[in-house]
Length: 340
Image (cartoon, rainbow, N blue to C red; front, side, top):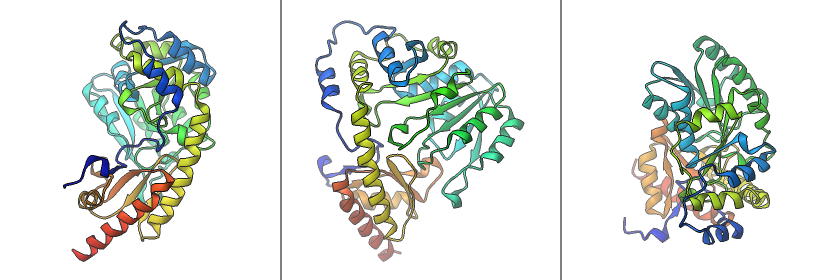
């Protein structure tokens, strides 16, 4: 389109609007990349365990939360087993389950009610289906919906002998988030976390699972040696000690999210705000609208792949960039109406 890459504000990736803290950048710069990483990630597991008040044996680092999703499916599912997905949501749950020939059942949210799920109805379905694995993204991608502790506990109880995989990749953006680690203690819940979203480190690929050691061992049996590289390990150790940065990012995102949602609603758009660092916006034909925004220097995610062809998802920008984004949406809306 004749745009220089630096001229485009890329909001298609759900990353924090602040760079990684100095301590993380320094840890990566000082990393000695000549030797192999420690295959047990002892220091990283200890640092992450300290972050959550558990021992290192309760932590399994991975090459991003995505790797851990695939490891969970290899460890917990097989041909003909059932996986349930609360949708619309991240597509890798279904992809990973189908790779191991599992059956996938979707329990769809209610679009007219902010994409909320009927939890009581979902529990009844779960008791009838008796799945081996239930995937819940919390906060959910792309809606941002954050389920309360009682709702998640109800879903876990309805599973019977199945395992709940609770993907909390975006939970660091949630103000007042409840502690899911306690839910994992009985052994039928696997919690997934990401360090690359709130710290804007997507290129390093680093996530981790929290769960009972015997459950994590089932995943570890399928994980390649040295799955986490030395740079990611060094960054992760530093990140685990940077709760102040997490709080700063959370506050900044909350401010910008509210301003952006207000601005877009002022244009007559339906906005699903949620609790994460992104918004879901109904725009009509998402593919064409995304192109119009890109022509104006703003890149968003077309949500057709989520089964939402009339919606786009955009990461919350820095507060100083909100007016630019709202202006681009306003111009794209005018063009859409003039070409109708």
